[in-house]
Length: 252
Ligand code: BGC
Image (tube, rainbow, N blue to C red; front, side, top):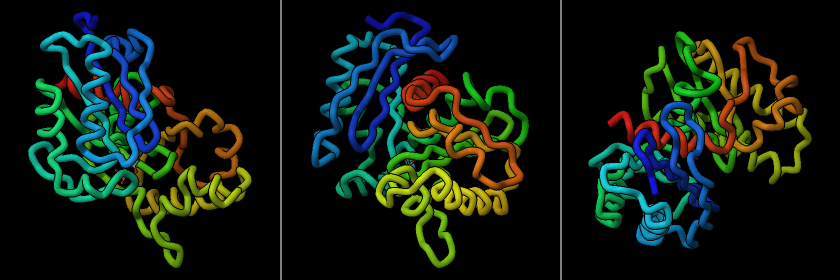
């Protein structure tokens, strides 16, 4: 049963949909995380049913803030216009309306990288940082969050900037590209250098925060990323999406 001073966060990913109650005071989980494999195909109806299953599992009380992190740009009240790594049938769907209707309660939805960035700003590596934080998540895709003096500028999609002569950055430099192309850490870091240098040029950030599962192995590849801007690993690792979604819901 969810208690007060908690919110629930749910993180929708390509292989798993994960949820947990979050203590808002410190961004920790208040109960063990539940992970359900993402239905295949990951259609809106099937994913909405899984989100409901997670809420039912935690017996979420009425009035508890509920936040959902989703791997596409999200504007409440508007249909999704772009989807990279989940089923294309999401394009045109108002995910917030769908989840509210299916779950029978108010659900707040935001981009997954924005959720992770918010979590880092509230509880982790970007807490109290002045100026521009560019948080990136390296996973199947590359997610980005822009946070200026603690304020999120939502829906940046800078994982899709074009690297000249090579194409969409996430297809070249995401962690999935490292495994797909069987790259060693040094070779992958060369691609990341190219990517982060473009972000440096366009945004002049004060710090990069790097999240995604692979960031726990940051000692293996950070030393080879050759850029001027300080770069630090995320503090929350694989909890960031859930924690950020819960925090976001509580702020609404
Ligand atoms: C999507 C972003 C998402 C990122 C990480 C990208 O392919 O376009 O919206 O944040 O993957 O999941």
